[in-house]
Length: 69
Image (cartoon, rainbow, N blue to C red; front, side):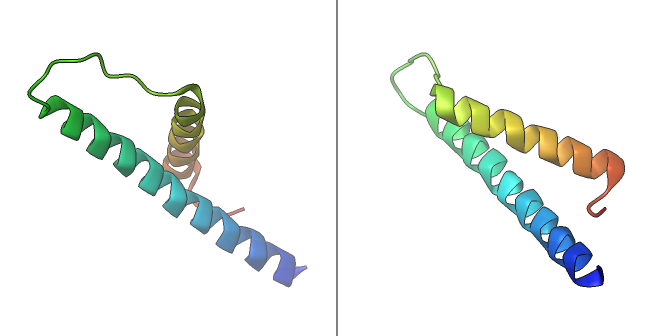
């Protein structure tokens, strides 16, 4: 049973890390869009918006509850 718990804890940590990377990527793209000399509307695809929403949910859950079971 401890092996399963350890595997789940490590997978939750990997999900947290990947969520941080998804959010950092969107922040980078937004800042790069702000520095564009031609003003255009910033748009996110439906797939990227779902990934961003899941990433924010994982980060908020990890901050409130903590990483682990």
